Image (cartoon, rainbow, N blue to C red; front, side, top):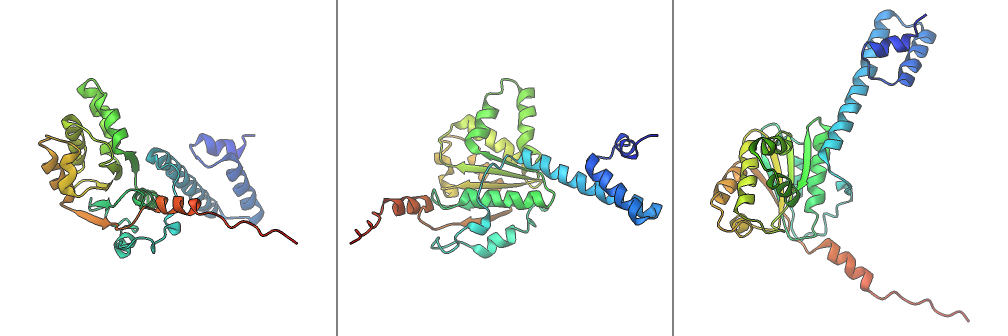
Length: 254
């Protein structure tokens, strides 16, 4: 006699053998009607597929380790539009393909806030990819043919949400500017992009000197863009200062 669990697996159900066996045992004990069994199996399979989908999208997102936004100290910055960030955390900006700019000095939490928006997007079923700008440029600039470039660039063009981190920290050249423009232009009004930077838009030309496309790049990115301006001292520097303070020595006992 064929094992019913093996039969369900051969039909293509992705739920684990243990989960299927447990459900069938429960259905037998509860004397469930056939329609209830089918409904239960469908629910079990849907949950398994959603979990697997989330696992795969989380892997592809490459967010790495980061602190949850619940640990962000909103009282540390002198100025930050918390209400704007809270609205963005609903991910309503993704379907209309709006962009997000997180701008502020180094060490104020731009990457943490950006990655958490990526996390919220994953939870809502969107495809996400995170990359430092330098890593993306390094990968795309070493492609030696147009077909190879087009294959690689799809990693950055196709996600619903692309997070480009640390624009302005590493100088680049005109060819790098052309590559970034290619990505932003391909996503323009189709998919959302988050950029973190320490520079104002007018300073982006300092990263890509003599690059003619920077103006067009900025124009496309800012057309539908929500800005989070962070005015704060470096949180990492503040933490480092606390470690430098001398600790009180224990008083000798009598």
